[in-house]
Length: 361
Ligand SMILES: *Cc1c(COP(=O)(O)O)cnc(C)c1O
Image (cartoon, rainbow, N blue to C red; front, top):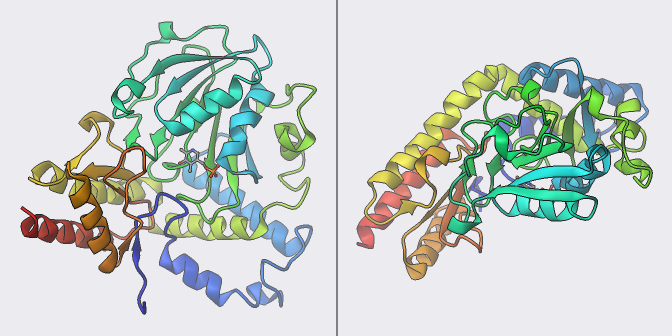
């Protein structure tokens, strides 16, 4: 393989090419420091410049209010499934969860180890192909928080509108939609994301948490699982994922240069529109999700025949469209078209799917 492929992986996924080129050019000697970012002390002045700039850019690009802390952590999004209840389930010991897929289900299971993690609504009855409707009355006003997964990576749904949870702080897993379009952080108590979908390489987890929710962790909380530990030390209590933070900084610079999240959203709507339009008009392929809940980032689709699905995946791969096989629980195909997937990648995929349809019907 001499050229780069179009990688439709759900994560880790593509990074913007200018970011990779920049990282390559700075690999041996970061801005005259004589070292790679991978080699430098996390206590050095030069690395401090990186982590400070990464946070500044994230605050600017997302418009994060000043009463929120930004934490750069490790342990993946999955560690948050425990950190959230340990830190937040500390008043009534109750929390409300909406199950919209595997990730929300895993989060609820983990929280149930620490308290009363109630399932308020679920879309499991239809293989998570929609987002269940709720009203403020569905939520326990005593709950310490209400939890959603905003974009469901496996099933390809997303919240078009946030649920009204009354006064209960809303917590959201935004791993697969952060930075894809504007997000009003002030509507949440906490949002978190594994970086490997839209922010950078694996190894970094970003938590954005309202200050008043920090500092009430249970006594049993491991020091490293306490948000306060990291908030008090600017994410430098121990060695942070330095290189991943550096790449995240470059991704944010790329996003800012491109015009920020309004512009990114326009591009993402265009990309997703091309794919959904094709699926809506195809006689062979169809999307698996109810239209109003369609994700901009993850697009699952099927032919209706396992055999043809497999053939399509195989032939796509031969043409340089990789990781397009659907999740085993959905089957078929799934195109994850995160920020770094070029428009051209989606156009070429649709061209391939059109040719496949002609040849196979
Ligand atoms: C990928 C993903 C996760 C899991 O992330 P890890 O960093 O592997 O723990 C959780 N939630 C969502 C929505 C995801 O897309």
